Image 1 (cartoon, rainbow, N blue to C red):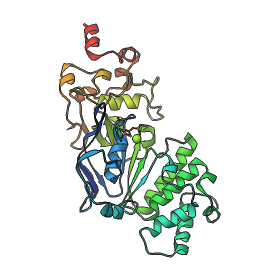
Image 2: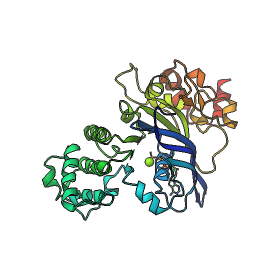
Image 3: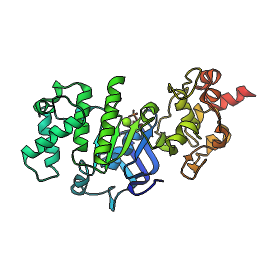
Image 4: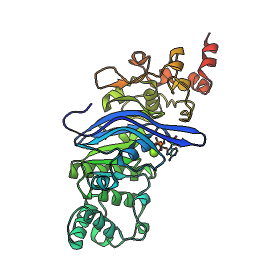
Length: 354
Ligand SMILES: Nc1ncnc2c1ncn2[C@@H]1O[C@H](COP(=O)(O)OP(=O)(O)OP(=O)(O)O)[C@@H](O)[C@H]1O
Ligand SMILES: [Mg+2]
């Protein structure tokens, strides 16, 4: 649910990859809207389907992927759209920033050439005019001596600078949506902060809505208006940043918060979630978080809960026992005793508890 106009609407998105080991169900029915100018954080551990979902939106998945559902951008349906139609949208109306800037940059061209070409691909302007715009863009993302930098090749820049060039390219055509997939993961913490600042500039200058994908809730804190939490290919919680950070209603979200160093909440110590996310090949029935969940009961092993409204109609959580999370701290649930047992199957644990 979004306030104001929705620029991007994803409905029932599913992505499967047939493999020799079985069907990889990477995205299992994800729905969300993105409001104009809003920042939507998507968080979840490695393998939860964040990248696959965003690549599906951009039409960038390999041909082997089986994709269904709907991705509406304004009046246009993007799923199943022709390459020609998608090329009008990609890079112009929706742009994407990846974890490794070298996936987006070409090592054999200068960055001036690459920014100018990104502009000229969608606008009928002279090379000189495009290069002037490139100088302005580089200045906006705080590249020192932008005019001289136009002649640099990507390998002559630091990783953080390269990522800022990619952000400059992403904002070049004043898109409506910028999707940033782990834009800071490959960088050290001080550079991370500079990249987040450059993303903020991109948002301010273009008015674009932003999807900020990360496995680190810390990156989203203070940036996102709303947050989606993904686990094993599904949305397990969705809400405003305040809902997610201060009143989570899915044990997994509480677990993520417990593993995050925070300045705003007094915590005795960090409480990581034990165990690992499940394989999304041949998944058993039930809630995929069950083996790692301190609240799990028998019903969790058989019935996968749907995302239902909790504290407000727009705060959704997929948990049979979400009301039990009211007022709970990560340490209550994922404390030291629990951590040691987390790797054991749920049935065994209940046996022990008797
Ligand atoms: N082309 C592919 N063929 C088969 N399986 C794939 C393919 N691409 C992704 N997957 C699988 O889909 C699942 C979701 O992957 P995805 O890359 O979306 O995770 P993620 O949430 O982005 O994780 P990370 O934080 O590591 O980037 C994983 O199990 C992955 O192995
Ligand atoms: Mg990813």
